[in-house]
Image (cartoon, rainbow, N blue to C red; front, side):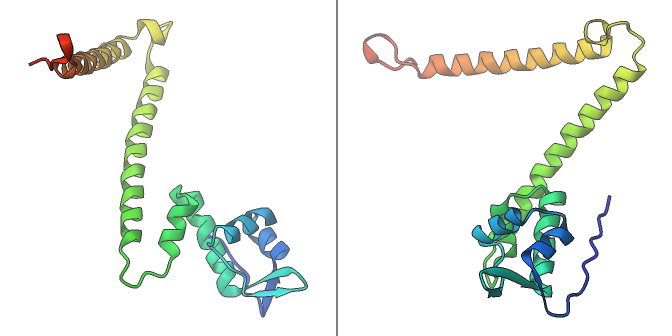
Length: 167
């Protein structure tokens, strides 16, 4: 799903209220982004913030990254910072891609379960479905195996009598 945001090209500058309305956010959001260092209006008159076209576009980018990339403001700040030879923003992007990939796997699995519940002809999916039962049994066995290996590891590392390490 692609979202295209049309920004009118202001002749000069826009007030914070006009920008907030155009982006569909509260003025407090724009002030928060400013406080976080993501944007700095170049023009202030009588205590009011005014944004030029470039700044409005930057605000729209921040909004886009938050909405579509599920990025934190810290991640967005790293991405929008002056890059020069700084590779930190690459790390931020790679981390987000990895995280999104995991989320996609989780959502795909959730979707498969939900679709199966619609096709399952059992009266009570949670207790009678053989597909779910087998999957839950496998999950419990994996967790039991992890717990047993952690318990064995703890026993090997815990001190024996008189403070001696177990072999």
